[in-house]
Amino acid sequence: MSLIVILTGAGISAESGVDTFRDSGGIWSRYDFRKVATPEGFAANPTLVHQFYNDRREQLSLVEPNAAHHALARLEREYRGSVVVITQNIDNLHERAGTKNLIHMHGELCKALCVRCKKRFEWEGPLSAFDNCPNCGHSGCLRPDVVWFGEMPYHMDIIEEMLIRADMFVSIGTSGSVYPAAMFVEVASGNGARTVELNLECSEVSELFDERIKGRATEIVPPFVD
Ligand code: BJW
Image (cartoon, rainbow, N blue to C red; front, side, top):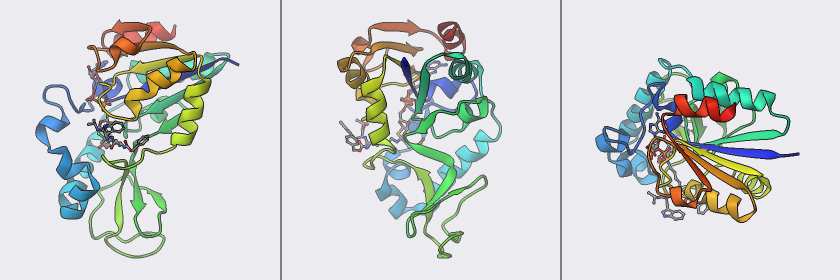
């Protein structure tokens, strides 16, 4: 059965009102990633890191999935083969649009991870350095369940298998500047997949794709799916 593997990045959620990272005015123009998105930054100032993610969690409660998220959910429902969405995004807009076969490789904003007992918890509200772990009961051991620089992304074994099996690999709204996601196109292409990039601008890896479609996700993803 034919398999379509779709990689999404911050650009697919931009028109929902979620900030991207590297566009002008993006998150990394306002925050030093070393301070808020590394294990070292968290160890040095957990309050700052919790505030950074609390603000983004609050922003998430104010936004809705857009036409691009809905189009991918529709593709999964209606395609006669298999569709898997691998997202680098920590927002929950794909699942809120109805996508089921979804891999969050950089974690999830609405989850907390206990660094002591390694359990994960749904976490909708603010998280602080003083919260107790609901499982082991210790305080000060909860962190956002996201993948920071220098950490291994989640589900890499399944992702690699999907990329090897893919008949088509589609990348949507990602700058191709963060590894290992940036090299997925090479893995899929090297294993025979047709590759297509949908993005507002050229990415760092655009030339590796068989086909490029430029535009805003809400305008180019629905017709691409159709
Ligand atoms: C639109 C649009 C619209 C806008 N419509 N499009 C070489 C090999 C391997 C690793 C490395 C390497 N060199 C360096 C590394 C280490 C590092 C890395 O990649 N550093 C780079 C800076 C060079 N990587 C890591 O540390 C990763 N771990 C790792 O490598 O472990 C070892 C390993 C080795 C080999 C195999 C497996 C593992 C972990 C990376 C963790 C990234 N974490 C972050 C933050 C945490 C989550 C959070 O706070 O949200 O994840 S960084 C940030 O970047 C976030 C994103 O998921 C990620 C990607 O960003 P994305 O989605 O591409 O967003 P932007 O803003 O960059 O781009 C938006 C795009 O959308 C643009 O192109 C726009 O044009 C477009 N767009 N509006 C359509 N309306």
